[in-house]
Image (cartoon, rainbow, N blue to C red):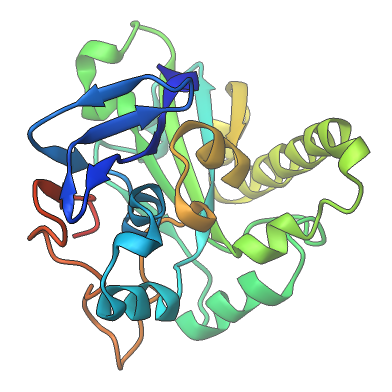
Length: 241
């Protein structure tokens, strides 16, 4: 249940014996498997129960960018606009590093369009989900977590401010679609915006990251954790492993 997420993993010594929910209920188990990201997982376990080596890895980890997600309903056959069941990247003719730097330095509310978008059509990927009229698009663009959180300056205005931000982001998306997919733009009937706050509420990822580790030439592969247990009867099998 959403309001009864795992609070911590009770154990004796180096052995995990179950999970304790936020309401205080304890569920015992012979083995505990976590699908949360490593940072969130080991926070529940308790850093006092971790080895010095693992703590050092956790403290040194730099997290990847987060994302905005748009869920769009379109009243048309999107195949007429060149969209199929594959994944589509719309990107400017720029250096990739320049695109990334721009996402971390410029406020997402300043510009009128998004530089890059990842677009997929879920109703073509899964024809059974198609209702016979409205196709569903999922659109993703990457943003910097700290830049997004910096938009909140007054906690008392968070709710109203959040709605204003989502409206502005929807406007930017519509401006971008008007340029790159004008036929689709004219037939959009509904847009729902998912932000890092959405990820925080539903899946509680660390810094609402898209992947776990920030990649670079010196760290091309994931190395934070391995699926073998650090504690007896406990395994972290996050999808980023």
